[in-house]
Length: 136
Ligand code: TYD
Image (cartoon, rainbow, N blue to C red; front, side, top):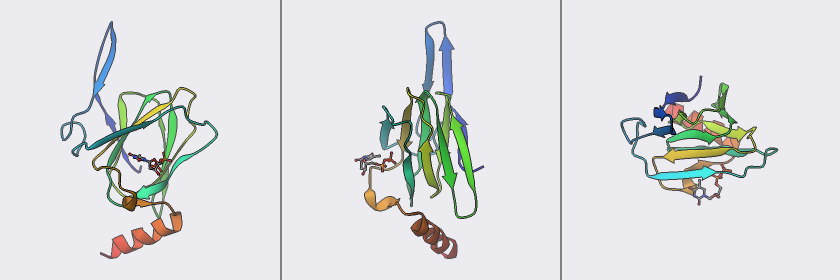
């Protein structure tokens, strides 16, 4: 498997559910940024990039979607459909998100502020980056 699934601490009672994540306790990094995507086009992909350093916890807080994680050798498709499960991506993996349900809200907790220079948006470039990384 690529990426790691984390079960979030969750409290459920007759009023409903509450799930939470704290820096270092539930998520193995300091959370500096939160973003979410919503009203998604069900026919189109998001992502299609890798991050050189960024660490993320991805949570499909409503609905469902698929997340494909890929490195230079293998790939793994996750089907996220639980608001209490996060997908931890700490390595520079290529990621693609697709197959969004109509109601999907996809939340990401990240350890850094937005930085375009941390993105690799071309898969060939990503494979080369991983080769260089291996040789360091
Ligand atoms: P991007 O990460 O490419 O989105 P996706 O992978 O879902 O397609 O981000 C799209 C644009 O949004 C990007 O060019 C800049 C902007 N953006 C921010 O300004 N801050 C953020 O935290 C994020 C995630 C994106």
